[in-house]
Length: 88
Image (cartoon, rainbow, N blue to C red; front, side, top):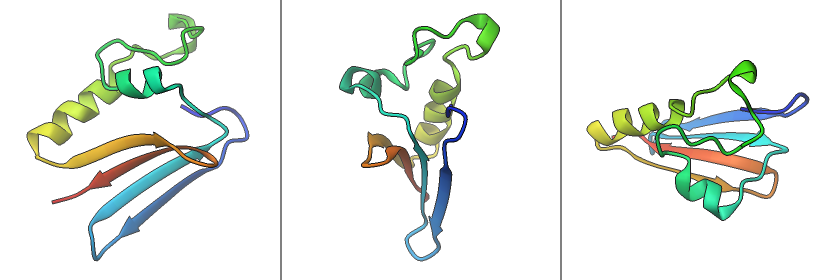
């Protein structure tokens, strides 16, 4: 989820098999970061069903990555929020 005008960058390091995706302009509270992978959790509480999102997307991602034993995390960065994934 990114606001209009946000920049999304994707990098993949072939040597370490590490993928990172960062979007600018969005910062999350520590509480939100801790709950992002919880089913039905939505960091932006103002979003309604009319604007999209059920709060299941990151939970599904987490479930798949856990089943494959892959490491991942989401953190605030200087410019926004980044998702890191280590492929095995």
